[in-house]
Amino acid sequence: MSLLLTRRRAAAAVLTAALLVPLAACGNDDSGTAKDKDKDKGTAGDSGTASGAPQADLTVLAASSLTDVFKEAGAAYEKANPGTKVTFSFAGSQELAAQVKQGAPADALVTADTKTMDGLSGDTGKPTVIAKNRLVIATGEGNPEKVENLKDLADPKLKVVLAAPEVPVGRYSQQILDAQKIEVKPVSQEPNVRAVLSKVELGEADAGLVYKTDAATATDKVDAIEIPDAENAIASYPAATLKASKHGEAAAAFVAWLSTPEAQKILQGAGFQQP
Image (cartoon, rainbow, N blue to C red; front, top):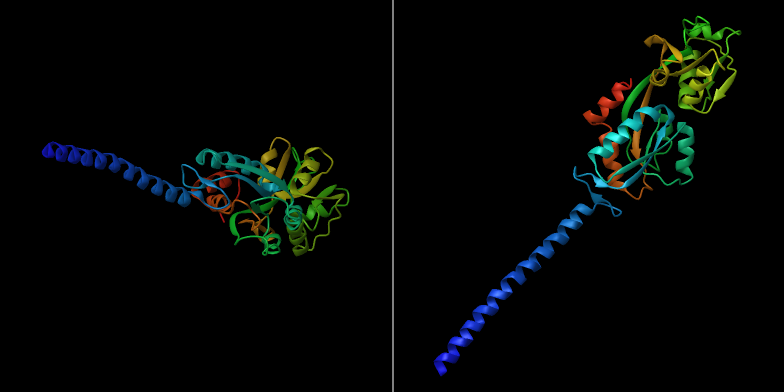
């Protein structure tokens, strides 16, 4: 009887031990999962995507001259990072700077000049130049007024439109005109480069100074007259995260991606020059 009781107790002990082993294993799995979640979580509630970049809905403030190419770039980035959405807000760089200073909710900023970006150093991370550009003279299709060079823009009979001097392209325009001692009296000064291009497209102006990449988006409506390098200006496009972003890591991942071969191929395919 005593022997039988002993055997029953031994069997019960073995059964209990067998049941405890998987429970202990489950406890270890829960601990590891929690650590993995903390590792992948990122900042401000971002979660990781298949490519490793934090997942988030991003708002990017970008210069008007990036309108077409960034739509393509944004689609490529979203495809490579499922679950991430990139929304762009396009305007003149000076308007974007005002939005940042007013606390507009956004995650990253790309301007058409370093001066505007430098003026926001307290609001941004360290900027990186992602592309460069040059100016051309945009005329109506077929160049009906036979504009050949910058000097022709001084003709008082010619209706010339420029961007306002506080706009990067307006500042670049004035810079190259001053360097050649050419005085131009524009019929209007526009808030961004797309507005200048539109005036020429609609026939409201005979000519205007725009970025080469903008003229390339309207080849069926305007002609682009090249400006020699010695008389031209180089526009640099810096990109930076915004310190007020609620998706810091995701914003940084997007800004970093703009310098990758994939993004550079898209930018240079649109006519932008390498940084």
